Image (cartoon, rainbow, N blue to C red):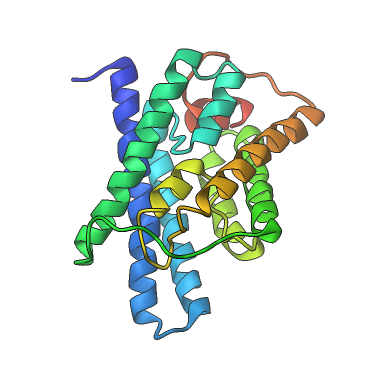
Length: 236
């Protein structure tokens, strides 16, 4: 049985893959059933994401920290809660998982497996929205009360679907995976770099806001964001 880093990387890859499958698959289903009503499609997509994200964090949190997000992993490495030597492997696992998750969603809905999105998402408003969404996500992760991070992260992402102009990707791996899906949840490859830069800036802002508040005691060196930082300090 895999132990240590290999097991954590498998959890990150599988968790990220399933997250992207939930986001893209529910988007495809919502678009097909909503008869062109974008509001209903977004509502269905956001509700599925909330439920899926909560479950995935609960399942994989004790194993890898349930980051599912390079921005989260980078922050945890910066804070000493993820070994810096594990950062690049974590990010690689997340990106691979995101791509596989997109392909799995396509396979389930009898779509072409390999495709690229044509959905342009660009402009200052979209980038500001991604920075806001990611800053809020990191703030929730870092300050959630013990045992409540999974529910709070999922709820925040569900809300951010609606209050941000970008529908809250808040995750460079999600932006990467969605490039490979020409569906309701997709993003054109040319639009992805702007989203990723905004997300990384937002993550840094979230850390700065957290640091401006009273610091909390937490164990250093534990990789689990949701189960360690999320519950003890408090910390996809």
